[in-house]
Image (cartoon, rainbow, N blue to C red; front, side, top):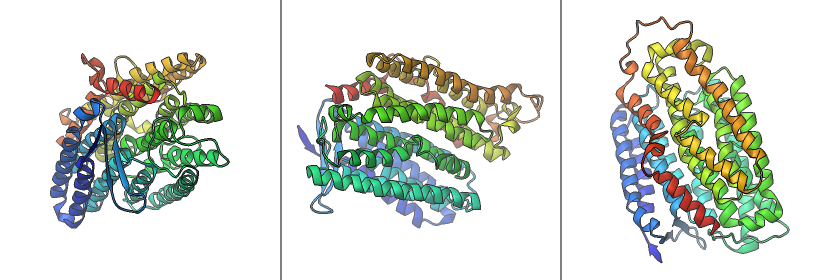
Length: 487
């Protein structure tokens, strides 16, 4: 059944209009801008929630705007797109609450307006019904983000911004090239179950173009070069926005091209999945090694993100239902876990100005609530049951067994040990380091604004809440998503 609907465009429009209103509101009205951000994100979330019942019932929902003839802008909603859109909007609301009281020091109006616009574009990416619509939202999102990276306007921030911008433009050119190849060969941009591309002279060129564009956004080795510099220089709320939402759009794009552009059979025949699998494994190991060696907390979290996104690409490239369940579930689990870590790191930086891990000894006594959330998220990252990351790694392991590749499970186990090696010492040192007698600081609320602490707590709870419930709704949705692609 095909249903014409207005809700997706309304959700995107609410965010875009709110971004404009915040921009026009003036620097002195940043509190009003914060309230408007929260209200618009909540409204967009509620609008899309009205579609859950129809999507779960198996309806195919779509809407097209007659723009950019002869193609148009197309929206198509299935369980994958709706679940990620709801995840993005929830994470966006949590970040808006955090940002409302975070000491940005300057440019509140500009930051919050761009923040909302990026969320509108990210929502458009996952709701897009074809490659062209996705391209337009994807590029608008990417090019807007550099304005957040350069927020502090330091020499280092400018250098990080230029690296990100050059890589983004390069990815855009390759995406557009791949788009042209797809149109010449198939005269089609729309998602199609099982894919619509056939083997041809330039089919591999198209796949490489898409893989580089999406892989760069997902931090896949060797396209990760922008991440550590950006995470080290951008304001913490912008870093969290990138990790929790923007990186996921790259993984989302990979899922679409694997299953609804080229198709699993063609990809398996050409062996492209093996290349992505190898790069995913390198991302996991390389990211973990670099994180272990890094002594700057934001940069360590950046390298760990390369490893964590590697798990998602690992699940996509195994081409099994079980592995895809793990990959899709890891998108949600990583957003909660990594969001907690980044917001905690931002709180530490805002209160103490410290970013070197060696300087964090004993900080657990000054900021006990912040470091408790950080420690909890660190345990989640290791993959201890019943936390979200354990569930995703379990399904990734099942996917490896289904593929008769048990050695891949050893890589997952090794990566968990490495996660523990670079996360847990931070938590241990914070509470049991040599400065642990600094008890003069208040233990209540860490002297942080309530909005910042509530944001960290919400994400920390989200890291484990679904695994403890009688019914794990995100896992059920991930299973249904995988079943739709492989049945």
